[in-house]
Length: 430
Image (cartoon, rainbow, N blue to C red; front, side, top):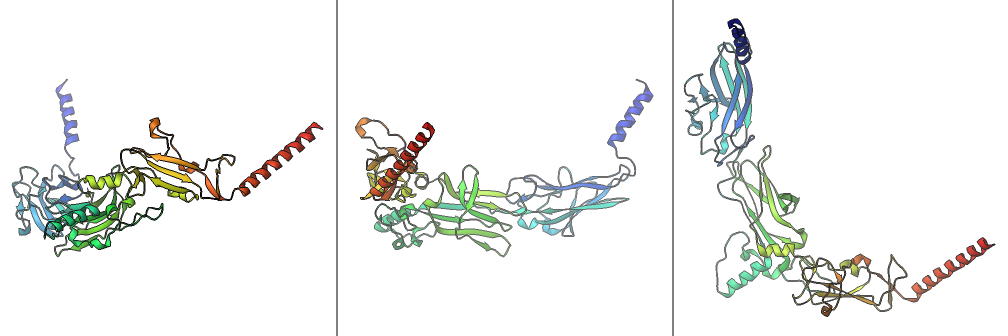
């Protein structure tokens, strides 16, 4: 390759890399670097910096980069050497001798929430000047953790009774403190007939829920309710009595204490939790209490349906060897055998199967629910050592008063059908 050709190629490369004379001064981007890209988090072990990326003509280099906050200068780099901190409020908050990129603002710990604001990068050359701004958002979620507790009211009261019996006088003021609970108000509702009244006052089916956050800046959006493991987030809001308190420095705390939630209001495989978000940022924290096997067993306990819908059909349901969950579902009273439901129609009522009017019924039916069953089965004696077939409660009959009316209706229908058949046969024969 000849010398002229080599020089031509070198000229092409230099032309591609070096801006041409007369190219305009331009700020390409002002951005936050380090950690999240849209906010600075106080207390995070991250090196944050405000970056000012610019482009200048090669024959008109940068003379000065000046940073202002809300229009007030606080940081200047003169194009060479180390930068200068112009505002004493930023002393100790920004690095005045960074190892690289001295035109950028390098924050140093400990940071403070009052760094939030509108920043402007101004770039000067001998021939031009330009500027671009950036809104810096700060998230300060405090230096101590968010505390959430969920406990079973029955367990709290039992522990309180034990403390009282042993002479303990520690009233306590923490979340879920049983000293704040009026024990006389919470009594287990009685069972009336076959109906199970799982009321709010049932201490064994009520959860006590409390939340306390550190000071958070700026004001957070807090949503508390059903936490889904599938979504890893709160999917349905619950009224928990949440209150927000503002401090003079502009930060906020969120809290509620001893909020009572019925277990039956929580879907299975869900928990109680809160999500905390900061507006205009991607900041999000989802909080749920530490695992409590007692609470988890109340929420996720299996069992067979309580057959309330069956009773609406006019059927009588008699239970034996059964106990009830907080949702009104049925479980065996002991592991020695299943819970058994005897289903029948009242006296002077007959059973009618809507899907098969000709189907007859022997007067009653026994269903069983074993320890690990999630549905009712036809009851089989224990000595057969065989599980009965699963039974869909919707296939059970409806109890209708009287027997003769139903029989008469069926007889009339058969008579009409027979008559029509004879007439049609005679016509076609003719």
